[in-house]
Image (cartoon, rainbow, N blue to C red):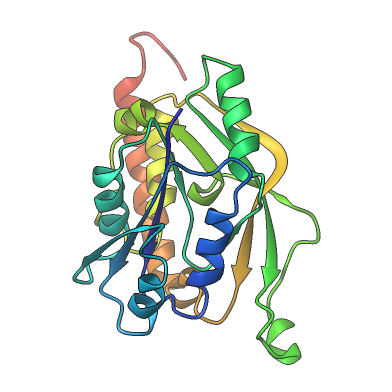
Length: 232
């Protein structure tokens, strides 16, 4: 199985090197890493130049994270896709754990793992206390905790580029409606960084509206796919 690891980055300069290092230090390495720089105006491009020998970097005008991810998927050559946000981290065994699980059951199309949240260490104590961080890992129904067969991803379809703050929620709602066969593993596979500029923190109102839109589309899709005579 060839794995394509895909990242969209926008003004991720403070964190992207650490995120890339976590991808590059996997005990089961990805076969390719693709980063799409979505028109960053900070030092992101400069950082990415340092990784040019090991990472495929694509650049575009700012078009939003969903478009950037779709560009990365279109360029990917792997049999399976994994994703990481430019401010988060993979645990070193992430791909090794998930490849083993995905290969152990031919019926599976995707696997997820658990996510442990953490406060970014550069934040002062007062700011850190404003974040509510669960003590225990949480089931990671998130693209950063997913490994998915290419054919399954293409069956569900690309990320909806109308979504600017909830692209994965919309994709997962569609995947659920189309019967994605997946399993959630108990192991932590991703560390999710909490910091001042988290997308969900900055775009909370947009995220709420997009979540409602995604829920409606998912319900419409489920009704459209309901078998005749079914009451559920």
